[in-house]
Image (cartoon, rainbow, N blue to C red):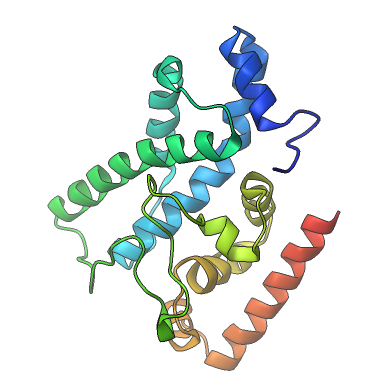
Length: 203
């Protein structure tokens, strides 16, 4: 796995488990952008509307802090899978609450792991399931935390087109509809966004 700062996530987990409060805080801070990205991709794919996923992420972080002693893994993969499992339950609750408020209903709810156009690739997997995570599918890298942090630094339009095209696996025609732009404009925006992301990751 990639380095996160000067320490690997596995090392932060070990030191946090030994009682190092600074490493524990750092471990959770590193994952905030990752959880934000995963939550947005999943919830917006369910509801088909833009939503503020920050409350769900905050709730997930609080629960993970509270239950850290129950985490039995050691690797970054295990750590992120555990966080996704907590996030998954909170996202399902959020969707139920959202539909119960009488707000705009989704055109169609999409289960996590839905097959993409052409059946070639799948979208974001079930949080607790094994396999590629959304950020791994994004650029085929194994440093999910660093990828998510880089995406978070992009302009909002770049973030949205990457989320819709790469994480939700929507065809460009639907991305254009969601972003209220022409298909050629969306394709050009996506190419610029990916190039900017690659530049950020190369720094």
